[in-house]
Image 1 (cartoon, rainbow, N blue to C red):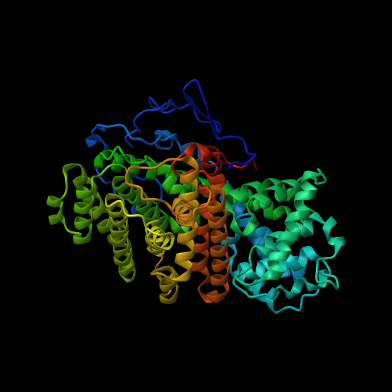
Image 2 (image 1 turned 120 degrees about the vertical axis):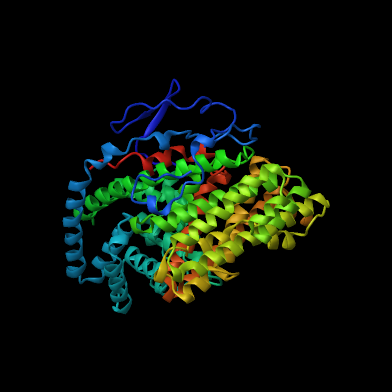
Length: 599
């Protein structure tokens, strides 16, 4: 997945070149060739240093004794060595300019009384990635849009109205599209020549829930005509690019920060362009990028120290990717604590996952699970030598996390620990199946592997460190086995398994995945199995759309669950595992964290 923004750095003759005024950085040996991963803890120099604790001094790192079967990190020490000081010099004037633009935008919200103008304003603010600055204004605007009597003959506006309200958890009947149908119940031919309207209809239709054949028809109709237009080269920029992206991945399922980078390049060409919005979006992105780059620099150091300390060189060296996944859920500046806690638990999950799947014997896995269930220093004696440092670091991480959060938030850390313990049990069960040569049926395989995909622990962790922003009702929605958590888990499990099946990679501890299970149980080809599982993924998206409307009052937490869901197509785009094979996302990581948007 990439954008048309220039690469923030490129590789040439073994040198990493920065493109924003920094000197070239020499990568560590072996960065671009096969070999052991760089022994990559967390010492922050930014405003997030309060939320990070050093696992162990980097001086105590000892070399790994074996080579990982996974590809080495493509980043090496790039982010650790990156000099952020030149970025800081321009922050003051950028912040001053941004404050002035924010006030101008608030005036726009106050003066846009027309419903159509209000809709376009909200849509632009959201797609340009500055909605976190105007939550009260957006909520008031959405309330006004809901209450107004909206009558428009424009399919584009009707579809936009439908999408905005459903995105915010407000139910809108698909009957609003009946006016664009003929007596035969089908969409009239005249709208087939309106690409912008069809694109709006296509994106809106992907907010359908179960048993909405009207929206299934709208989706099929819009896709057919958009594909015809694209194939016939009848589209002009920037609409052609927007249609191509939507046909690949509709707007409600896009990784918002990535889509924002595209849209910032395109918005200035749109008829409704409001220059002040675009100017603010560019400034705000660059200001946040400074925050995220400092965090990523510190997190990369934390991961390097941890990875080196535990000496589990069989594990994927994926610190940057872990931060990126956390960033997908939380990018706002005031959510540093939660973002860091989540990124770290992803790292620990990978350490445990790869130890179960790619290295340990069945007896060692049983001992590791017993120690994790006991959750006490005394359990260290149960473990083989190579697991002891991992176990100590794990206990230390949870102690530090509990110490970082407010007293009212500590019970969430306890729930997070319980889900991590559960995850260990699920990993062990999968290994037991393999050890016993047990062949589960498809439903049984899905039931367990939906739990072992780690979504439950991620959803709980996403509530930690957020204090009163997460209510009791919201916490209950994001934890346990709710329909929202299960839907996210199934989307991740199925897309993960499709990518693994297509790549052909299988770790020694991997049980038969859902694709293989379906093929074996139903005696069908891989093509049939993949089609069936992709239809199951579609069903889970509809469940999540239902969750939006059923839990409108808990929308801030629902939105984070949706962010987790939309991160999955990003990492598993085109049936590839970009977390494991991170060269697929190397360019977009640079665009998000290193390369500023030209002002």
